[in-house]
Amino acid sequence: MKLLLTGVAGFIGSHLADALLQRGDQVVGLDNFNDYYDPALKKLNLASALSREGFRLVRGDIRDRKLLSELFPRENFDAIIHLAARAGVRPSLQDPLLYQDVNVAGTLSLLEAARFHGVSQVLFASSSSVYGENPRLPWKESDLLVEPISQYGATKLMGEHLCRVYHRTYGLRITAYRFFTVYGPRQRPDMAIHKFTRMIQDDEPLPFYGDGSSIRDYTFIDDIVAGLLLGLDSDIPFAVFNLGGGHSITLSDLVEKIGHLLGKPVLLNRLPYQKGDVPATLADISLAREYLGYSPETPLEEGLRIFVDYFCRREDPPGDR
Image 1: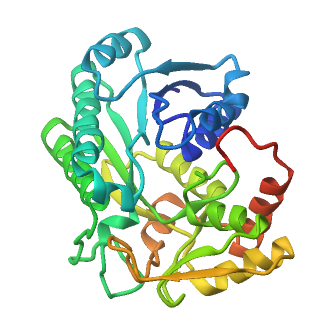
Image 2: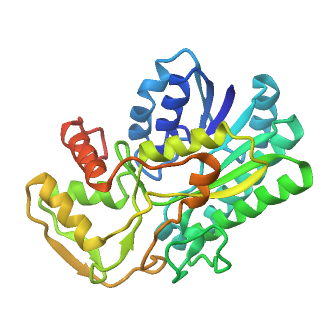
């Protein structure tokens, strides 16, 4: 297959590109290398993909309609995997117009390009943030209470709605994937596990929001990539799937485990709960298991060990520490 993979230089995108190339697909990766975090890290993420003949990198923005109008007829894509987005719950509260522009208008631009140029299959990266503070755990795709409490979550839910419209109106075959806190090597430096690991290693007090009882469903990157590949190879007309680890851990237990792996004490700077943060996330993955054969294989303890080993042995690029 020949694929357009947006957000290719990011954490998930770069791992997915490697997996696609490994199995023989051709990948055109689109990324604008924005400064949400150090672009030098994104360049390192692509080191493996750039060494492969089946990969081509395009530097550009998903909102650039001229670029898309030139790219699509030239490449004749079989499918689109749309991961590009402005990321982060807390930053979305500070700049909601940017998140609306990139995550909603950018997604619409890609769907329009797919429709106009006859690309019939699209995979869309959504987020567990769409569920908001739904108190019924684990969260199911069929839950009626889907009320995001951040602009980021709202933009992802709007992206799902656009996908549904393009399926029903134009017949595009689309699957959307609600990711639950993905972690592993190449994880963004602002995300909790990466940030906590760095700060514990550097003997810095962790910004510890709330009393530590909040829980998250953490999903190892290899399991997310496996789920996306299963979706790419399916013939499902339209669906929304949770991709999670199917288990959760409290914030207190998480930092304790990271400290233990590093062999260092954990220092805490206790702070109030943050706006936009939800008290708990937990995925019901039975739908993805039934229709895709999705079965996460990496327990949190193993995934944390892999990440901490990666963190401790890597060379620090500019801006990572």
